[in-house]
Structures are given as structure tokens and as C-alpha cells.
Length: 289
Image (cartoon, rainbow, N blue to C red; front, side, top):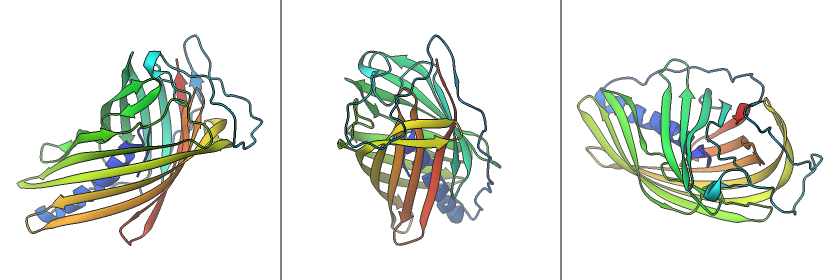
């Protein structure tokens, strides 16, 4: 998820954290932490509270037209493709260069925003937790903290701080043919022992809604809106000798189901002229109160 726009940026964070850890440990003469695959959860979807998960019936066919489904959420946070509900949670399995289990939840929802918490579980290292706030405006959802957080331990940690944000992460009523764009910048400070590295990152993502398609993942079969996104990320790491530029590009196909949210993301990313990496994020279980 170099991605994701519903917490999709959080996965870019983990990817970049790996790069920074490698850079810092090289400067400090240490080694990078090892990690292994984490099997995806196999739990089935569940619902709680008074409502049940409802998926619009499109008979699994692909369509290039039609209106967006009814919104889910409260007030300014009512969105067609992401239910903004206190206590909602989603569990995903990520397969690719780094296999992991990712759990996203909404511990608090307000009239004009909500708090998101993402927990990354990777074998061999402590769980990584990212919390951030989103802003809601007439149903459009904007992640205010796509990479803002601190990760690591007292002797080696990386801090990310979002410094600017333009455009929505997910529009209110994305339907086939709609396009949107989001750009943001992030300041980065990494510390390993006595070594401190400063950096910055500029991210630009452009998305287009393709149409409704049937998608099957561990959590079930969903009629979902197919969204294609291209992301360009420019990172500068300032070392003692000279700045090190890192340019990454990625393309993601994402599927959002009404009243459920993101059910699948298939990402293709590359660093400079190097190897292309692929990762698939798939919903394994969810709870919508």
C-alpha cells in the first residue's frame, strides 16, 4: 500500500522506514533488523451493532456508468465508498517484498473528521502502530497525517511530520470516469545512536475511477468500484557528505465496496531505474458497527 489512500500512505511509510533503517545502520555500522512472512488472517467478515453490511447488487458485471451508492457515515464524513463509523475495523493481508498483517480501525469519529489507527504486524519485529487524523468536508475525506508519526526505539527511531496537504484522499461520490489528485510533503528525521539523518519527501497521487467489478478476497466476494492510481514520490536524505535522492513511482489498482471500504489493492512500484516490486493488499475480515 507505496500507496494507499485509505491508510494506503501508511504502507508507503513502512516501505520507506525500511530504506531509512538500512541507511542509518550503514552509517552507524550496524545491521538491519530481520523480518519474515506473517500469514494473513483467515477470519471471515463480521458485523456488529444494529446494521449489517450491505453491498449493491450489480450481478458482478463491469459497468462504466451509473450513480454512486448511498453514503455511509455521519455529517460531513458521509462517504459512498468508506463507512466512517466509530469502532469500525478492517484486517488485511499484505503479500509482496514484505509480508504482514495490517489492521485498520476508527477509534473516534467527529462531525468533521475522524481518527484512524493502523497496526502493522511483521514477524521478527515489534508491532508498528500509526495513528492519524482525517478531515471530512461534504463527504470528501482527507488524510491529514499520511506519514506523521514516530517509529522505532530509544536508540533508533524515525519521525515523520506532514508539512503540507492539497486535495482529497477519497472524494465523496467517486463514480466511473471521475478523477482526483492529492499532493503532500513530509519532513523526516531519523536517529540511530549518535547518527542523525534529516530528509524530506514529496508525494503526488492521481486517481481515476474505472467502474464496478466483482472482486473475491478472503473476506468474501464484493461488487466494488475499481480505482486506478499513479503515485510519484521524491525523497531527499541529507547525509554528512551529500543529499541522497530517492525517486519512486508506483501504480495501484484499488477496489472499494460500498458500505465496506477498501477490499483490495494491487500495487506495482519501482525505485529509480531499479527492480519493480509488486504487493497485494487483500481484506481478510472486517467489522462495521
